[in-house]
Image (cartoon, rainbow, N blue to C red; front, side, top):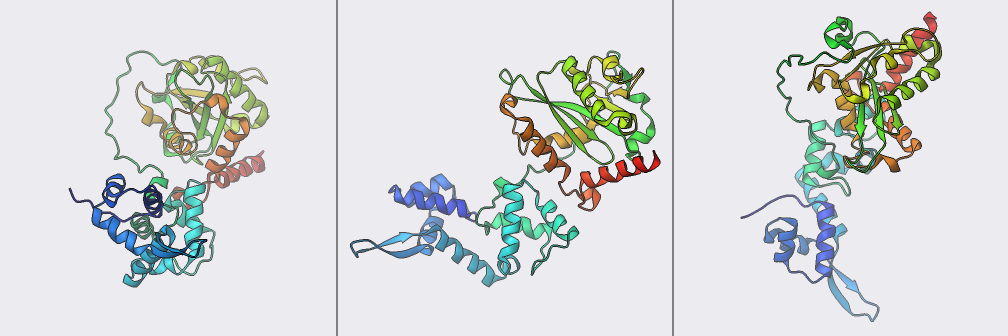
Length: 347
């Protein structure tokens, strides 16, 4: 079967290593999954004369020479004229996506919002096209965040047993609109099954998408309540104004509704909890999306026992300062700080 694709710089590094190992073009084409003629053309494109220490010469293959010629050919065709004329922009895009886990839209959105100056501008579709063509030195499709799946269709789930606390059906409509600040969703992110004892307790504010992540020693209700106690102590008397409600699922870690709602610094409740319908994770949509973003840094199967509080804090800061299209590529931290400023001014 004939296979055609654009070679990336990573592919060219693999070709160089395979040639040094003495592999044939046929073997290399099978490994990289391209037609054998592609390998022959590629090797010819990257050939150069190498001078040995004994003054003899060899014909060798250079992935950098081959990639530069490939980029020059694309530029001649007009396919990469804009990005090719601004190496600074190309380096910035590679750094943001490869090193800082940004999406192409987030990179370009941040550039526009912060008015960062480059000699050219490109659109999101054009950037995806450049990545597909393999014109970047480091950046390939493998570095992109997972593309969102088509939206699932959900059926209404009839409550088979009473929730552990107040049902989401009784949650005020204003929470659904996301126009009122102070309504959170809470979930736990599990580590490697059977190995990781620790978990992450994650809270997402529905309006600003501000994230709080706390490493807890296990998935018990006691650990969740202790973590909430620590959050309440941190915010003090402002806690009820910032945490007006929290929505959770019916997992065992959230079984102690009374304990989670009870204030640890004064008599009475500190907040109101609402419980989703069974098997309805979409009712905590903000949580679900944030958890997928966390997985860019902590893949499934990670042992959380090895993660330090400092590492978790770095991920939280990254998440809260990530450019978001819903805020015109502003950040959750900026939106959250504005809400807190408003609360303090009214106090």
